[in-house]
Length: 79
Picture 1 (tube, rainbow, N blue to C red):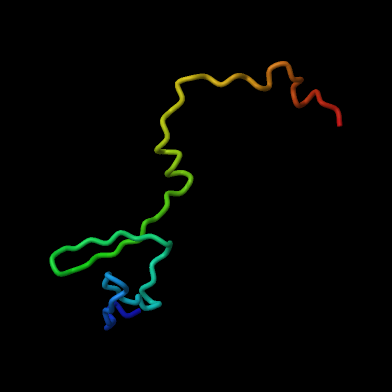
Picture 2 (picture 1 turned 90 degrees about the vertical axis):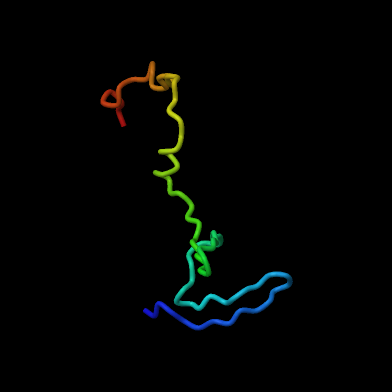
């Protein structure tokens, strides 16, 4: 895969823009752009997965009720 490609800059309204070639496409539909000297760095914003989201949640301080209380054990149920 090429790591470099010549592109042209153009105006889109009051913004400067460029077309990102297919081999450089980013996943998702949002990105963060920042400048380091004369270099622009564009990084996709990745949505956290389920496990990452669960890690960020606060732990529960309350106990949950026993919803199985009063039900017969599973091995006593006849089909």
